[in-house]
Length: 252
Ligand SMILES: *C/C=C(C)/C=C/C=C(C)/C=C/C1=C(C)CCCC1(C)C
Image (cartoon, rainbow, N blue to C red; front, top):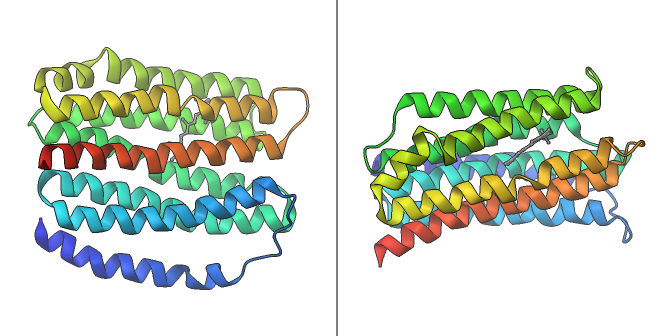
C-alpha cells in the first residue's frame, strides 16, 4: 500500500509536467464567453483537487488512502481533458464531444471503482457488483455518445442512456450493492449513501444538459457545455470531497 502511494508521487508529478505545454497554449478567452470561463475555472480546480486528494491519500493511507487515490485519478484525468476541451471551445465555439466522452469513459468507471472500494473496505465487495455497475455505465455513455454525434436520433440516444442510469440507480439503491453497504454500518454505510445521492441528484444534471442541448428543436452548444461543466465540478470534485470527509471522520 505505502509503496503504491510512493510510486504514485512520481507518476503524478510526471503527469502534471506532461500537461504543461497545453497550459501554455491558452487562446484568447473573451470576457463574455461564460462557458469558456467555466472551462477555464474547472480545469484549474481539477488540478488543485488532484494535488489535494493525492496529498491526503498519502497522509491518511490505509483503506481510505486507495479511495482517495482513485478520487485524485478522476480529477487528474478530467484536468487533462479539460485543457483540451477548453481549447476546442475557445477557438471554435463547438462542443468538444469526443474529448468529453473519452473523459467520461475513463472517469465514470473509476467512480464505480470507488463504490467497489468502499464496500471492499468492509469485506462486502463482490466482483458481480463491479461488473453490473460497469455495464450500466457503458450503456448510459454509449447511448448518449451516439445520440450526440448523430449516429442515432437524439431522443433514442437519450432513452438508451437513461435506461443505463436507471439500472445503476436500481442496483445501488435496491440491489445487492445497497444491501451490503447498509449491513456494514458506520462510516462505510454513510459514505455509500452520500455517494449514491450524488449519483441520483448530481448525475441528474447531465441528462438536463443533454435535453437543453439537443432536444429543444435546435442544437444549443452553450447550454450543453455550461451545464456539463457544472455537473463535472459537482460530480468529480464534490464526490471526492465526500470520500475525504468520510475518511477524516473515521480518523478523528
Ligand atoms: C465525471 C463524469 C461523470 C460523472 C459523468 C456522468 C455522465 C452521466 C451521468 C450522463 C448521463 C446521460 C444520461 C443519463 C442520458 C443520456 C445522456 C447522458 C449520457 C448525458
